[in-house]
Image (cartoon, rainbow, N blue to C red; front, side, top):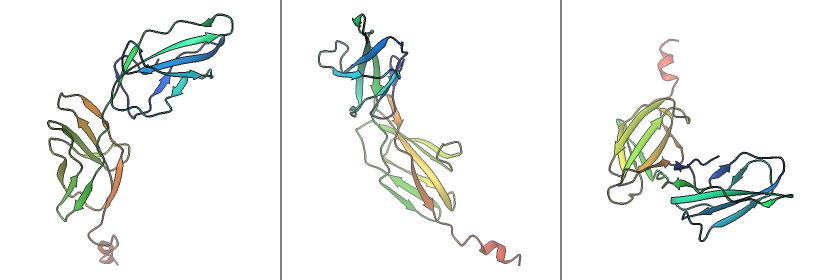
Length: 189
């Protein structure tokens, strides 16, 4: 089953997964901000696929979900035990980037007092070749200019209580080359 108890999900539209049985006609899912399900969002899934993406976005915070199965012979069974999950505050989007000859200045909108940010910059969109990974307490960072090329960055918010969010969207940018790429080869001709 997913999300697992206490899971932190990426994005604001969680995907729910569960095991299925062939005799089940449909599944009923409830999602609520409290474990007592006083005002749940109710969803009837007419599918045997065993997964469901919430159609609306959830605001950051703590949530609970549970599931029941309905068969043609027995009717609707009991709901599962409530399972908690968290929608973290997403990382901020980059506001600006100023590329200088020696350094690059990045900035984004400030959050709440006491929040920190993890800033990562990489040469690839999968972040396998990270060239900068810093933890900062201001909504901006200055890093050495790595030279011309394409780069990717992402930012994660760390709340004042230490709760880590998820990285915001991956963003890309180009640093211009200082001179045309063919100039160094002209001396070889």
